[in-house]
Amino acid sequence: MSKDTAPHGAWTSRWAFILAATGSAVGLGNIWRFPYIAGENGGGAFVLVYLVCVLLIGIPIMMAEVAIGRRGGMSPANTMRKLARQAGVSQRWSGVGYLGALTGFLILSFYSVVGGWALYYIWVMASGSLASAGDEAVRATFESLQANPGLMLLCHSIFLVATMAFIARGVNKGLEAGVRVMMPALFLLLVILAVYGVTRPGFSEAMQFLFVFDWSKFNGQSLLAAMGQAFFSLSLGMGAIMAYGAYVPKNIQDKRTGKLVPISIASTVLIVAALDVVTSLLSGVAIFPVVFSNELDPTEGAGLLFVTLPYALANMPMGALIGAMFFLLVLFAGLTSSISIGEPAVAWLVEKGNSRVKAATIIGALTWVLGVGSLLSFNVMSSVNILPGLNFFESMDYVTSNIMLPLGGLLIAIFAGWVMRETHIRKELDMKNFRLYLGWRVVLRIFVPLMMIIIFWNELFS
Ligand code: TRP
Image (cartoon, rainbow, N blue to C red; front, side, top):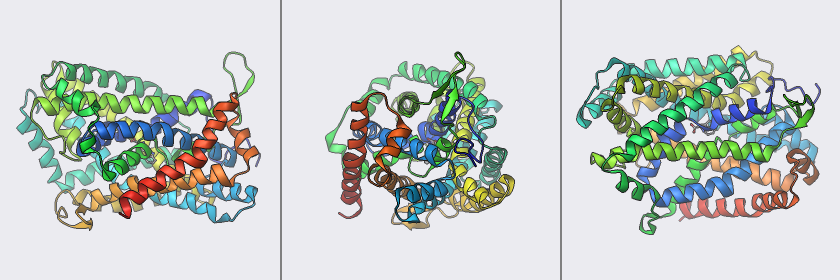
């Protein structure tokens, strides 16, 4: 197989890759997870550290993932094996790919449950049952969903089947067009909701909560949570971006000039990260004014999105229509992300000789079963703790985001920074500005591992 033809299909243009990667990055992690984790971790301190993590840890690792993926051209497990061989080191580095596939499988199981909530809320909003509802009625709607495992199971199943159907067709089909239409629409609705937030009486309190750095609220736990959120939101540390990078051709025909041009990894990654951060902040600006205007609790937890924005929407002109559209777009954003969460595991099974349909079915079935554990932890299993003080759902979320993703990211940084031949990674990145390249390399080799080890150490062993 020639280097330029990935076995799983290829993006057709630079924009196709940017859109797919943005589709992966922007999802429930921005709209659902960012506000709730920020709320639980005291707001401003968390947000600032999160931004620093995106800039100094996330972006350098994302560049490494795309570069590794493009060079390897296969599923993360086999890409890592191939590049380890080229570097003359142990092929056990393929373990990074397996760890990633496992992490993705665990994440997808609870991601799909939350995706199911978004699906349900399309219907809730469209039905108009929340029209001019008070915050009690909005909360009751969410609580009755939580108390109904059958309904959650149905929604979880639909979300997962949809995800696997897309993966089975091949991730380069349909994603580009979908993201191109969906993303700007989602953005527009978030802006509308954020503007509505600006008009709420709790707006200035919300801004203070989100953007004023408060040392007293800052601790090792929020540091780890901020780093975890950076990984989760940028889709890093499990090979999702590596898998998408593998479908990037070395050169691509420029639409205007018809010439073959290389794709710049650095600028592509910057665009994706910027869109991702802006979406998260917009979600915060939409959600927290509702929290503070109605004396809701910022530490509400995983339900925060679903007890705030439906309330705002219910009390807006054309709220039912805008609300249904909003949750439809959240659902789409979730789907374009969940596709990338499942892809590394499926791509690996495909390379083992399975058809895409079979591979997606196997992974989907396993994920479905695990997801049942998550959805039961909102009702019958709510008092069953896996980690101390954390139920099944919370434990999955915590372990994957705060431990497994950063660990995968750390290994990827070490691999790209210390193990791969310098000429290989440099050629792949192909940065015009040599100083910037050197900066990236120093940050990846020294700063990223050091920071991450300190953060881990601080939280896990003290
Ligand atoms: N980034 C996505 C979101 O914010 C979720 C996601 C997609 C993800 N692929 C991933 C998270 C890989 C971790 C790893 O919703």
